[in-house]
Image 1 (tube, one colour):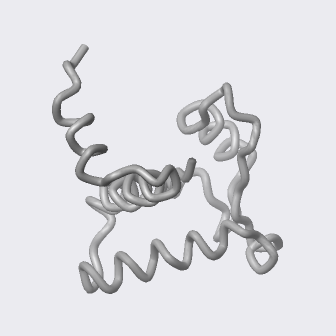
Image 2 (image 1 turned 60 degrees about the vertical axis):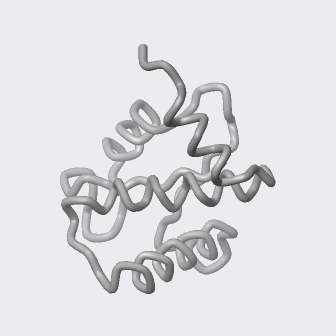
Image 3 (image 1 turned 180 degrees about the vertical axis):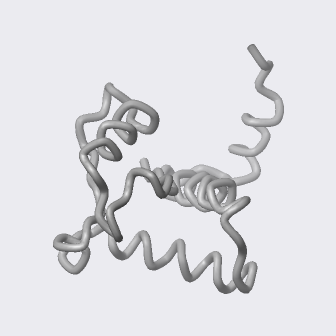
Amino acid sequence: MLKLNVVPDEYLEGKTLTDEGRAYFYAQCIDRSNNRTAFLTNRHMVDSPLRNQFDQAAAWLRDLFHGLGETYLQSYLDEYCFRWNAKARNASLHDEWAKVCLHPSA
């Protein structure tokens, strides 16, 4: 499963995730049942398989929206991940949207 999150500025030192940022990310964004979590950091960007996913997401955003601001960036990243995860499961995007739209709210 792919999940991309915008990191709040207070959790960054330059382009580096702080220890507090890492703790925030684990607390807010990680499925505790999944032990396969990876971060893209400056020293690991080149060799990480996630770099390709990040580049594809950036290209999708750039090509589809021709740039966007920070206000809705997380929503657009969520949309990209929803589509990517459906494709990775060989699921119909139409069926996946139907599940979301027809699922009773709590």
